[in-house]
Amino acid sequence: MIRVSQNNKLATEPAASVETAVQPAKPVREKREGMWRDVIAGIVSNKASLVSGIFILILAVIAIVTAVAPGILPYDPYQQDLGQSLLPPSAEHWFGTDLQGRDIFCRVMVGTQISLSVGLIAVAFSLTIGVILGSIAGYKGGWVDTVIMRIMDMMLAIPSILLAIAIMAALGPGIEKAVVAIGLVSIPEYARIVRSEILAIKENDYVAAARVIGDSNFKIVFRHVLPNALPSIIVRATLGISSAILDCAALGFLGLGVQPPAAEWGDMLGRGRNELFRAPWLMIFPGLAITLAVLAFNLLGDGIRDGLDPKSRKR
Image 1 (spheres, rainbow, N blue to C red):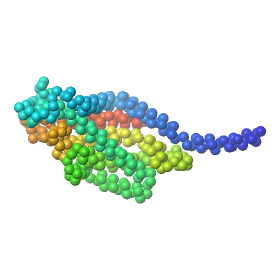
Image 2: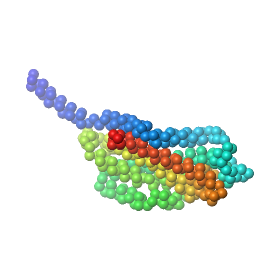
Image 3: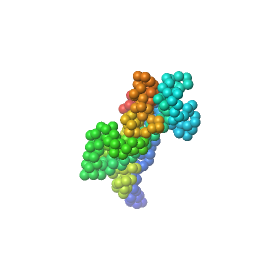
Image 4: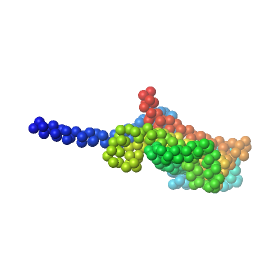
């Protein structure tokens, strides 16, 4: 009886060890849930990030409402009335009017749609491609890593706004092409971040255990490796939205982004610069909108980073 029980014990020990070695799924899931709790805690504990998050929610509501129900605005942002040209801010026109007599407040509100949509779509585009390229480079290594990262380095050697202008010069003006240009110039940043995270994570024991049980490279990367790189990706993506909004405004200022009569903050700045001394409100309010939106996303990114950084949570 003793011999049998010993054999049974010996027979069950390898199974238990294998089961213990291949349990990354549950810890990863629990870690992911804990990460989102840390993100919320980091934002709530940082007053500047909390206010910024509320401000971004307000911008999102404005963008959705003006897109779904444009009649809620007091004036038609595209209706020209030359008799109301260059009126200063007043109770009737809160932000004044432009050269064509259009209400600037309404145009700034409508411009929220373009700026937020460009920021989100451009970041989603660059993040998707950057994650794929960074994952391949970091996990495969060798000549694949060398080729991909040298291409990324060449793109990073050119200032992003200049590269975006060059792409726009080749593609032509337009909001869709601006999204592509802004997205393309941001790909190297995400690729480098993902690659560096994967290089550090892929040597962990749970990744080796996943290889032992026969998981494919695709499953290992997207189920066991990338989830652990999410904190760095989330922080960079949040900050990337502010950069995309700024780049969109710069292209609009140069006349390469949104084309008239669409209302976009950068385009409004560009068209109001010739009237700076006669009608400064043409630039003040669109410029203030750009500044507040970019600042809000930067401060929100700081709060998210503090929530995901163990050292910051201990302070």
